[in-house]
Image (cartoon, rainbow, N blue to C red):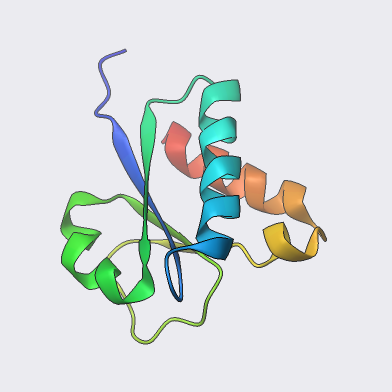
Length: 96
C-alpha cells in the first residue's frame, strides 16, 4: 500500500472515558477494513496542538472552536443509535 498512513484523533472532554470507548471502536474499524490508519486518543483541549499531524477528528464532545481537519461527531457510539452511519463516514474518509 503506497498511500500515507492517516491519523485519526479521538477526543472527548477529558481524554479518558468516552474517548476510550470511541478509540477502541475506531481501531476495530481500521483493523476490520484493513485501512492504513492509526488512532491517537486525546483531550479536546489538546486537539489544536495535534491537528497538524492528523487527518480526521472523531469526537464525542462539543467543539470549543473549529479545526483545520474534518470532524465526525461520534455521540452515537455512546447512545448506540445510528452507529453504522458513523462507521461508514469514518471508513469512507479513511479510504480516500
